[in-house]
Image (cartoon, rainbow, N blue to C red; front, side, top):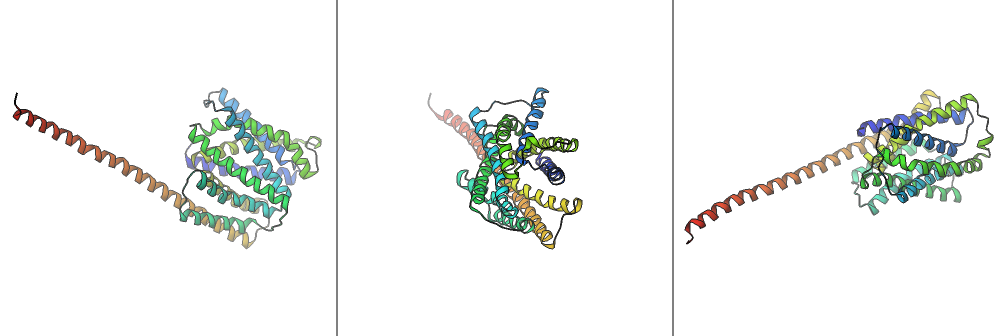
Length: 334
């Protein structure tokens, strides 16, 4: 799949699962988000295992320690994000998600020596301001919630950077990495999920009444999650963690718009202004990244041509040296 296809799949599947989960949790009263995520990952692994057995992709062995730590880190980050939402107001939780982009930029600059131009930083700043205006309604701080948010930001940033780094350095595909790490992500959430959900909701996932319609929506959510998880690894591998986060905020704007259109959620001029500013930031980010990519390609092509130009005189010089050697050979004594 190309980059455009990966981005489209990510947006379409993410918006779909948000709408599905909102119906499941709000309308049907199923509040167990962490446990549901573990089921998502288990279904994702089973689906990929079937695809592997049918030879849709080849499995490439990855160091077990790397896979286990990577899977556990991603699982912990999901749990911490859910806990952050439970301990903080929705506004502060949105601030936590917005903070992932600048933290990722800082980490990639410090540890991976990645350069971000001032124009790209400005577009990201504009994006964050827009999403903040559109989605943040209240800010209530507390110590435990703030600590959980910081831990959620750190683990999410590191996990997404590793998703990109592992694929490129170990030369594995997004499918191969997801196939090997999904069981460990699912395991830690499957074990901790019921406890986290019970602490946050005061309800027991095992004593919940699973009506046929609830089971149907859970099944649909798990099937959509296969596409969400696959496209997440695909987008991060083909682009970068920062681009994936930018895409995530595009999803936020789309969810707000769909919520107003389909679910008749309240929509204010502030929401509209924030979405427009965020979309402008996304467009500028896409444009500046495209310009930077083209300039890198041109410089690499000129370097390659420069090498070709350097080799041509050497060949000519070799011929001249050959003629000179013949001349000397004629005039030299026997």
